[in-house]
Length: 67
Image (cartoon, rainbow, N blue to C red; front, side, top):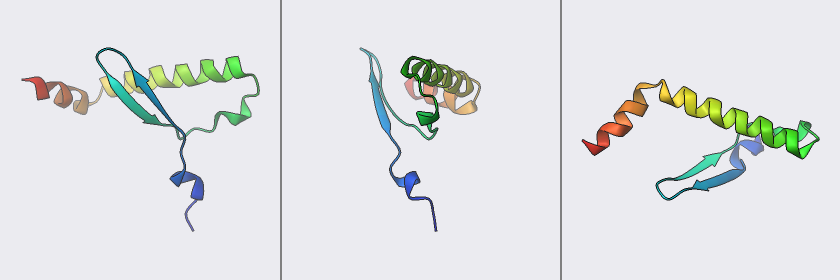
């Protein structure tokens, strides 16, 4: 049987003047008891995610939409 938690992933929507992005969070941050440290870990992971995306062919394909 599949893990039920996979169906109830927490989400966050980030919005600026130029971008709206909804992110589903798979990592369990609950083991980090200090909320400030938990936030730092999440931001670190978010930056890593962006860096990884930057290195993928999909990032260029996404920008080619505007050609």
